[in-house]
Length: 505
Image 1: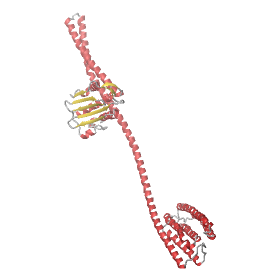
Image 2 (image 1 turned 90 degrees about the horizontal axis):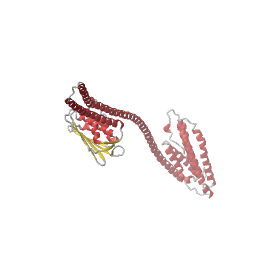
Image 3 (image 1 turned 90 degrees about the vertical axis):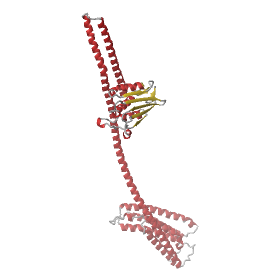
Image 4 (image 1 turned 180 degrees about the horizontal axis):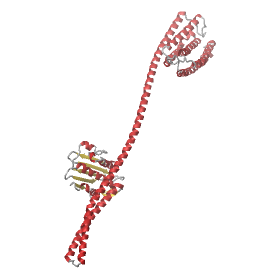
């Protein structure tokens, strides 16, 4: 009953591939085991009928001999199968085992009743169906032809007495016409079955071919997807490295911007301190000169009471001037020191919000004192917080510089307003100016890193990005921008109170 579709694997040289020989050999071994099991099962099933004499001894003996022959014939057949390399010989050799199976099946049918055993056509049907599924399309018709020939020969020889009738329990009363009719019907049934098996084989093979083709396409698609995934993974790695590099570069730029602002603050404060210190030095020098004059007058005994009174007035005025200017310089130094420490160390402490805003503005006075712009701070004097004042300093500095450079540039008499109020859950700071304002496209990008309208003038585009990151990421709040051309700009900053960043004092 063994056969496999070998024709598809033939090579044009007339020799068959070792791979195909190995595959066919494996399938024939499996078929031999199945057929051996079937013979043993049939023989075992006949033991009981033999015990009750339903099957006579000669028939049982014939079936036994036939079964042994079927089992033993596989040994030389399998031995020779692996030693054939010619294509035509291989095909004939492969077909011969099915012819032998048909002959063996005929012997079994004969011993189980002969012509009366025509109901055992299912034995042939199994062989034809198997060949139809596993072999080329013509094979079922070839095997059906051999089965019909073997059955017809057996039926005619039994009818004419060349071979004896089997099973004496059944009387043989067929005429030659009936035998021929049985043979014709039997043959027709086999060829109908062959057609069905061949058609089913063709459908199965087309389906198998289509499935194989689709499987190849799926494998190719899988490989393409894997290649694409690998390429995407490589690109993702490259992009991640680029992103890390950009993040590091941005961090360095932010730090550079931060220290550049601190350096500018140092220069500005130094310039601001220069004025009161200079006035104090001038007053002290004038007082020193007047003191020497008084001492000379005393030595020459020309000092009058009016001269002493005038000198004391000068001393009082000079002392007052020196004290006021030194106090102003001390305030500048104190505010600068606090702002510088807050920006560089980011230490959490308690501070008054209004005083701190005014202190930062005082440190930045050199940036706006000659512009004529007014800065108004509307903040309750009692509003004290616990947090990182350096963050507020950076936000105030960047907002103010953004207004001076962009919004109030070339504007006379501008106004900047800080409004702060506190609720139970949050601190709301509104910063606004009455400058030029912005168009919608610029307003949408104002918080983007490196976006600036002053690139040609040295702008870095990081100031408002720093503000946004401090407010949203570091302090967990939000910032909104409202603006229109010619209507200035307003930033609303909302900061929640929490134990990590900002608390109510």
